[in-house]
Image (tube, rainbow, N blue to C red; front, side):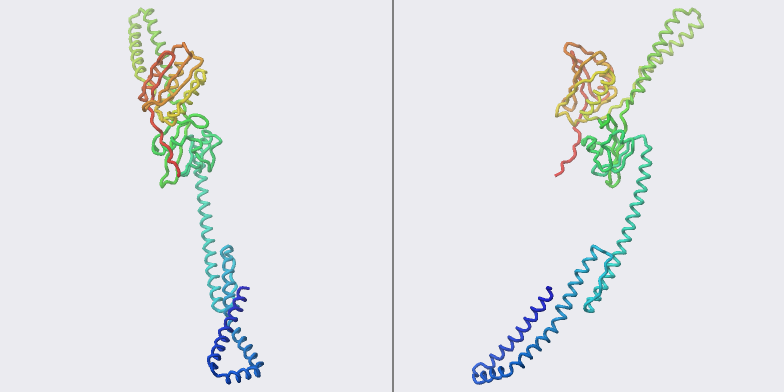
Length: 417
C-alpha cells in the first residue's frame, strides 16, 4: 500500500512539474500580447477535447515510466527484505526469486549464503554435541573414580558452586550438598578464603554433621577448586590408648619384679630378676620419652567451642554452656583439639555443671572454664601440655580454669559492590 501512495505522489509531482513549467512558459511568452492571448484562449476552447486527450496521453506515458520504479523495483525490494528476515529465525527458509533481474540475482545470492550458514550451524552443532558427549563421558569416569575414594571430594567452580561430589562428601556435609549449590553456605567463608591461600595445608572446621578436616586445592587456570574433606577422627586416641596400656603393663611388671625379689633366694634367679628390673627401668624411660604426636591445627573460635562441648558431653556426660564474645568470632585459633578436649574432660571428671567462655585478648583466645560456686578445680598436666603444644598457656584459679591459645584474624571475602 505504501508503494501505491508513493507512485501516486510521484505521478502528481510529475504532472505539476510538467504542467507548471508549460504554463509558466506560456505566461512569459504572452506577456504584453493581449491579442495573441485572446487568440490562444479561443484556440484552446476550440481544441479542448484534443488538449485533454494529449494530457491524458501524457499521464499514461508518465505513469508507465514511474510504475516499474515504484510498484515494481521498490515493492520487490521491500518484499525481498521482509522475506530475508524470515531466514534469521528459520534457517531452512529460501527466497523465491522475483522482480527485476538484479533482485533475482540478489535473492539467489542470499539463498546461497543462507545454505552455507545452515551447513555451518549443523557442523557446529555436531561438534558441540560431540564435545558434550566426550565431556559427559569424562565426567562419568571422574565421578566413578572419586566415588570409591575414602575422602570426601568436591569439585567446585571459582564461585564455590558444586560441580561434582562423591558419596563421602555427601555424608560429611549432609543434604545441603548438591550440584549447583554453593559450598559457602555449608562452610565458613573466612576459613574458605584462608584455605585457598594455603592449598598445602588442611584446617579443622565444624561442618553440618560434625567436625571435619578441610583442604582446598585450586585448579590450573582459575577453573575452579578441588575440595578435600575428611572426618575429624581422634587421631591421637590410638597412640594415647596404646601408651596407657604400656604404662599399665609396665606397672604390673615392676610389681611382679618387686614381689619375686622378696620371694626368690636362688642366685641364678636373682640374676634374672636384675635383668628384668633393668629392662623395666629401660622401658619406663622409653615410655616417659614417648608422647603422642601433636595434632595442632587452626580452627575457628566458634567451631573450637562447639567441638570442646561435644567432646565433654561424650566423655564425661555433661553439656557445658558456652559463649563467645562478638570480637572473638572469626578468629583462627591454633590448638590440638584432641589433647585439649581430653585435658578438659580429665578436669571435669566429677563435675556436673560448667560454663565455657571465650574472648579475644591481644593475639590470643582466652578461654575460661567456670564451675559451680565453691567448687575447686585442679589443672591436669594433660591440659597444660595441650596449651603448650600450640604456644599457649593454662592456669587454675579457684573454681576457674584459664587457657590462652594463639589466635589471629581469619581472612574475609572481599565485599562485592
